[in-house]
Length: 99
Image 1 (tube, rainbow, N blue to C red):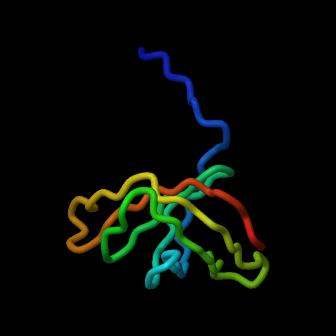
Image 2 (tube, one colour):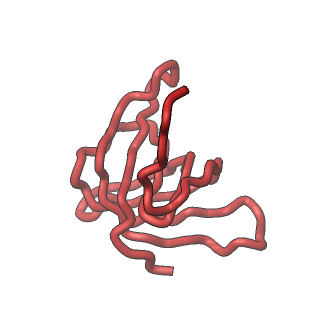
């Protein structure tokens, strides 16, 4: 049996939530946020985004109980999604929550 200890500061929550983003000094589009924690998130886009890019992101929960979250995030990595032709997994660090 392997001994494994989670090294994250915040637990990761799996979600499937629509979002919109805008690259600072660039264009924007839609995304699906796949997981979220207190320090970062993973989202899927239909195009690649360069690491270190800064994005303004708005996560739009499906139900009305939870308000939208607006944040500035920095792209850590961008990898093609296996089996998801034309999709990219974008891992981001949350720089600041705006609302």
